[in-house]
Length: 263
Ligand code: LHQ
Figure 1: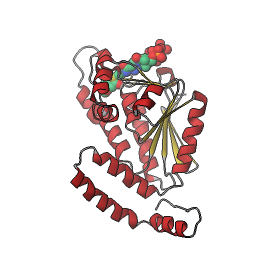
Figure 2: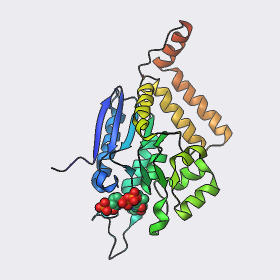
Figure 3: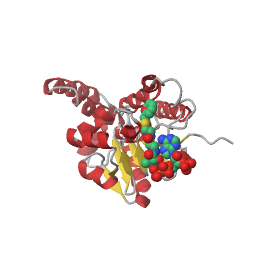
Figure 4: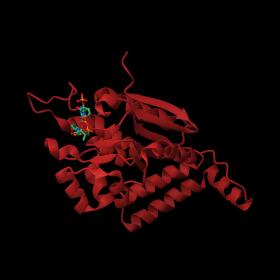
């Protein structure tokens, strides 16, 4: 029986989405792309899901494009990889960024090529101490994609971004944390418990506000200060209309923990 390329499970108010092609270090083929987009849509639409946890099964997180996929031609006529990006990878990264709920990525092992950049497109990235991030594209004559040329220089600066992309040098999880490329590194055995703890916490928080916070921070990358002040004004207006804002203030004044519903 064919195994599911992505598994989906809801627990404690958050969805766990697991890339599940461990024999290929969870490299992307068409089926995995389709299943991942479907899982993200499902999590976005389900009001009971208030955070997402993306991870990989087996010893790797994701080795990027499956270089042995038959639908990804390597001989004969030059393949149109621009079309592949337009159809599969770009919608994936856009959806992760636009999702109005926090997306945590638990990088359980190597993250290479598009796999590294999909991880970096998530909102909070944790990594196992044994994980590595590799901009592998230059090793096969390609350009970093899946948002890597956008996120890397913003996360680690132009000097490191260029060296990583031009050399394809692996970055250890510890180095990634020290550079601010990811949020935290954990011992391998602690990665999933820590990720689950954070997601369970996020799932009790004011989801609507968290979605707006995510949007504000993302838009700051291309806004000037004036535009960002305007955006904060608009998003704050929206946040203040939410029942969770009312609940947050009431709980503070009543000196009790808030009971946010995500609305
Ligand atoms: C793989 C893969 C893989 C198939 C490991 N494919 N089998 C491209 C084109 C189009 C449009 C969009 O964007 C892209 C984006 C990209 O992602 S391009 C970059 C593609 N990825 C790579 O170039 C990475 C290739 N993989 C590696 O360099 C290594 O496997 C890494 C460094 C990830 C891990 O090394 P090891 O830990 O030594 O593992 P391994 O190499 O032994 O791999 C384990 C198995 O996984 C092995 O299969 P086997 O049958 O021999 O056990 C690999 O062939 C398979 N695998 N990556 N991308």
